[in-house]
Length: 198
Image 1 (cartoon, one colour):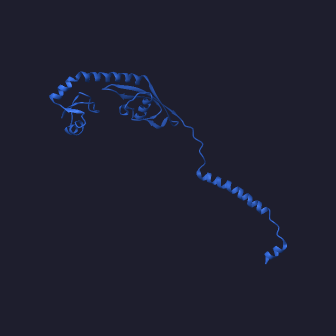
Image 2 (tube, helix red, strand yellow):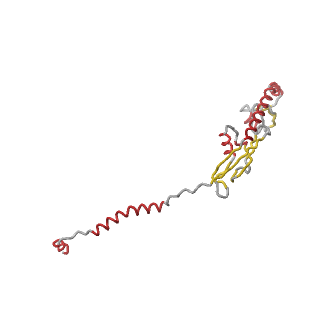
Image 3 (cartoon, rainbow, N blue to C red):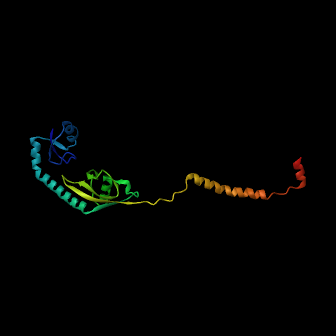
């Protein structure tokens, strides 16, 4: 089915484009949402009247894409992540982490438009990440991944050892009291001793 796009539709086209789509896709998704109009002489005439507006909008998108490209290529992103001694990261740098880092710098880019080499970066080094922009335009972002080896924290003794130590600490005063009691035996008087023998 031939349609004219009334809005930008991801993975299909942008406002004013004439596209051929499956009839079910047009009937069930595009037409009910007002994203397209069926191709007819009247809709073509309507879009011809809006042609200047559509071209101006496309020119603005190209200009903003060009500005974004210069911003992206002028800067580099630095990731400092925990890594092993061999340079392998304990995590990974993905398109989502690149998008988050760009957002911190005030640049909002959809993570789906970011192409990381090998889908994720898992080792220390310098990389080039591609960001797809408007139409066929692309920007290359320099990404530097630095690794730092985390110092091993002094591990606390195992729970079993801690329990044993607490038990020994509690047992020491009790043992000392028993030893002291054994050393100080009270003398027993003779008549009590005789009655104790009976």
